[in-house]
Image (tube, rainbow, N blue to C red; front, side):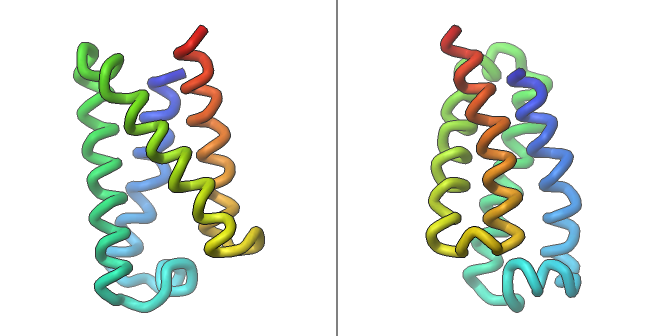
Length: 110
């Protein structure tokens, strides 16, 4: 499951990051216009993608560091719901990702 969660991060973040860095209309609609706050979100997403990629190849680190990364992601993704509302596309996507990462974290405790 941990491989699935880390790969899911990359699968979803690469196109999101591409759109954010190219200032695509879809990114502007979901994340707002290019602004320092959006650039901070882009930096956080890039960090998550880089760490996920590194943990996919670094087996020793994966077991130690991935649970913290996934727990942080579940927390912030769930917190976006009250801030953005249940109909916002980013909040909806975050719920799905939080569910997958939550199952992964649960599986690590078994």
